[in-house]
Structures are given as structure tokens and as C-alpha cells.
Length: 140
Image 1 (cartoon, one colour):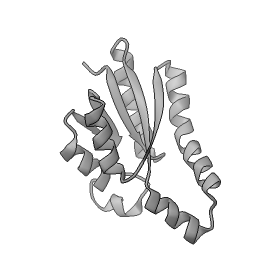
Image 2: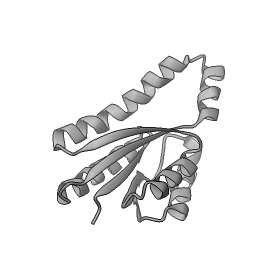
Image 3: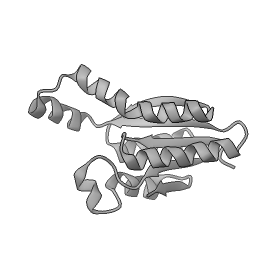
């Protein structure tokens, strides 16, 4: 059913809940694998460097720290996974990868780390839901 799972993450609690759901699905389906997708928005990264004085290496380290709990979860659950770092608009990039690489399902949290997105469902999850050719599971 779902052999190829694309898990969108930004390190938020919502994304961690989505990772738990992805691990559960991967354990049910023999030979299933998960791709952890983390999208770097260059505009947001540039803004952080300019306004917060963070260096790019510090930002990369923070990104890695956000993904570590998910990798730890998958290691404990003995789930096969790989990691994909994407650059660009998160909604656009996740939709592109889901469609071009023919994933069976996209799993993502309903809200991300961006405070503006918390007002509604989330602009990223909304964009992926509209554009992806495969099913999209949004985890609360």
C-alpha cells in the first residue's frame, strides 16, 4: 500500500507526531521506507543571518538538531529511512519531490514552526495537499 513514504519535517512537535505515524505505517508495510524531507527556505535563512546574527554553520547545526529526534525514533523502531535536504519554498519543493519521485504518501504535521502558519491549517500543508498527486496525511 504505502511502500515509499515522504515525511515532511521542520522539527516542530507537530512534525514529530507525524513521524510517529510514519513509523507506524512503515512497520505495517513490509519493505516500506521513509524519506525525511527538510526544506530550507533561502529567504528565511538569509533573514536569520541578517537579523539574528547567526552564522550559516550555526543554522545548519540547528537544522540537524531538529531532525535528530526523528532519526532516533526511526532507529529505535528499526524503520528504514533516508534524509533529503531541499532548498526553496517548502510547499513547492515538497510537492515537486512527492510528484517527481512518485511517493505513495506524504505525511506531515498540521502546523510548523512558523508562527504565522499557526493561524490556519498551515500554508505548507495546504499547498502540498492541493498539489500532490499522492495521498497526503496531515497529523494534528
